[in-house]
Length: 441
Image (cartoon, rainbow, N blue to C red):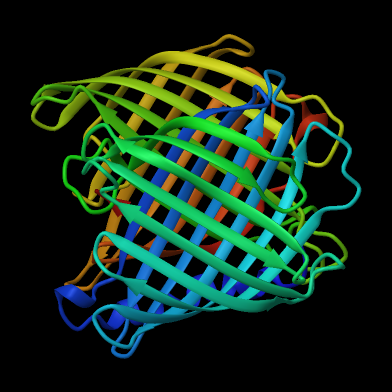
C-alpha cells in the first residue's frame, strides 16, 4: 500500500457523517455483504468477501467498499488482492446515474518474500444506465500514484439479470489500460435460492494470468431470510505503537438450521495490522493476516441463556515475508446471555468459553459488555474481551458509542495488551482509537 491509503481510510470515516442526519427511512445508511467461496483453475482455494456501505444524502449518495480476493494453496501460500473504494453517485433521472469513485488496489503474497508491493489507484468517472433487468456502465479515468507504467483507463461493464430463465444472470467487465492492454472479468450466476448463487467467473486482471473460479456466493442484501446473519468492520489507529500504526479487523457470521431453540453458526473473523514504516503517513504495509474460523452449535437453555459447543481455528499468516505461519485449534463449551454479542439488546452482555487448545492446553475466553448511557440517538457502552492459555493472556478494553440505524456507527477508544507468561515474550500495551461499522441482518 502507499501514501494514498490514509486518504481512503479517512474517506471511509467521513462517509458516515451524512448518516447521522438521516431525513426519513429511505435516506438511512445501509450496508450489504457478499461472500464467495470456491476453487480456481490453478487448484487453489478462493475466498472473496465484499463489505459495502451506502450513505444517502440530500443531493447524492456516498458509498464505500472494502473487499479482498484470497487465492491460496494447501500450504496457505498465495496472493491476496485488497480493494478499498469510495465515491459519490448522483441520479439524473430514474434510469441514469453519474458516479465519481476512487479505487485503491494492491496485491500481497503470503509466506513468500515480496520486497515490492504492487499497487494502483484508479480515479474513475462513470455513467450508469439501469433498466431493471439490465445494467450498463461506461467509465474513463486515470491512475494516480502507485506503481509506474499506468496512465489512462477506460472501462465498460454490464449485468443482465434473468437471462433465459429468472435464476440466471450474466456479468462482465472490460478494462482498457493505456489504450494498449485489455483486461476482463466475466461470468454467470445461477440462483439456488434467494440468497445463495452458484457462480462461475473467468478473469485476467492486472498482471495475473487468465484463471477461472467456481463456487458459492452468499448474499445479504435485498432479501429477508439470508444465511448471512451479522457483519462488523473496524478501522483503528495506534499512534504510539513502535511497530504497527493501524489495524483493520472485522467478522461476519452465517446462520444455518435455525429454529426456536437451536442454530448452527459459522463465523469468520479477520485482523490485519499495518506496519509503521518510516512514519504514520509513510508506506502502508500489512504485517500479517490473521483468520479465526469458528463453528458454534447453540441451544437455548433459558429465556436469556444459551449454551453452545464451540470450535475455533486460528491461522496467523505472515504477509510479504518468507516465514512459516502459526495455527491453533480450540474446542470447548460456552455460555452467553444473547445470541449475538455485538447486538446492543441489554445493558449487560456476556459470553464465556472454556475448553482445550490442542497446541497450548487448557484455555479460557470471555466477553463482557456494559451499558453506560442511553438516549434516543446514541448508546455509550464499554466492552472487555480476554483470552488466557498456559502461554499468554490477552485482553482488550474499549469505550464505544453506538448510533442507531440500519448500520450502527461505533467510534471507540481502547487499550490492548498481551502478557506472555514467559517474561521474555511480553509485549507493550497498545492504545487505539477508531471507527467501527456493525450491521445485523
